[in-house]
Length: 486
Image (cartoon, rainbow, N blue to C red):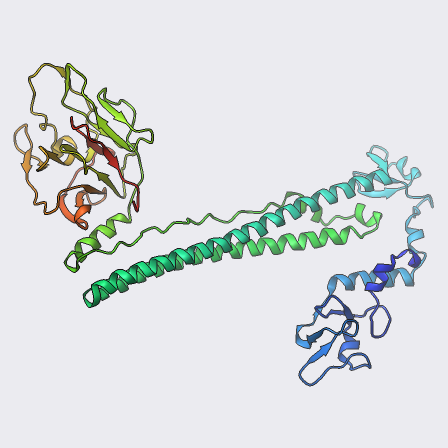
């Protein structure tokens, strides 16, 4: 049996110092192994200086004594070689049935035992499924190889995911650095008066960076743990590949079954975009207004115009982010209403609308109390088209008429709303809408003027889900839903 051991295995298990089978083999880091006693007892080929440094007796590579590690895998191989040397007839005896002295040529699937032909006809195995031992070994080895292949593929996936996480970290650091420079540049321009605000923004960014770092670190740690597990499983299966046929067939550890079902769990995906991107205001007296705008922008929600039940005189763009009205002669439309594709029953939500080219529009929030009806009439008699726009009817809106007249529609005691005229220092080209369902509040911001507050509806009662509401009127210019950070 000893002579059947491959030469390369023998060479790997011989100590280069004492030229005997390794005892407690230590790995030197260069790939060579020596006995622990040989490297620590200062034999003639193992010189250890006072600093704990030595060199490999085979290739001369230097190493630190404290870095030596026991090669347990090689120790197991040496132990088996010793067993073969001490018991040369063990392998021959193992191939014979201990009950009948016959060769063990069959395998019982139920008992997972190698048996002889006489055992097959005994009571113990009479009704069991038996196969030729060679066939069973071949099937087991094929299963083993498949499991190894699958685990290696899972290992490759883990390595790929680890590389992706490293790339994400680099990307994040680049974004963080760029954003930090933008913030610092903006505050340097505003000098001392903006110093406190600069620190606040940097702190927020740092907290977000820490959250991302923590998420990435958690994902990396989870992958490392899974990688360690799959390496251990692969090591176990590789060790079993060196087992004898009987040991393979009688293996009851369950390692193979576990290796067949183990699957890599992908870590939680981390967003690759910053939650909030800082934009520096132009003037220091706009700082408070901009702080409020930055806060509500943290609740940005993305949606499109709802194409369902679209009025006949409204046209949507292909991406449903832009709506425009067109005349339908001889009909006159007095309600060009269209809702957003999302509704809200809780939480805080913010969106922005580009109305820079329009001379007439109405926008805000609508809580459905009755079905929206499109008022299409033939003729010239025009009703009061604003009568529905009251909070008590479920509308919290502001608007523009005639290119310059801005209006806020509040409740009143009669059928028509109370129309308030807000002070607008800079024409509204881009309007921000903030909805706070819990506080019952709808606020409008002049984004064009660094986020100055236009008006806030308070104590709003949202008895039904609230929808973003839009009315482009008969002005042919488009009304556009803005993308975040655009």
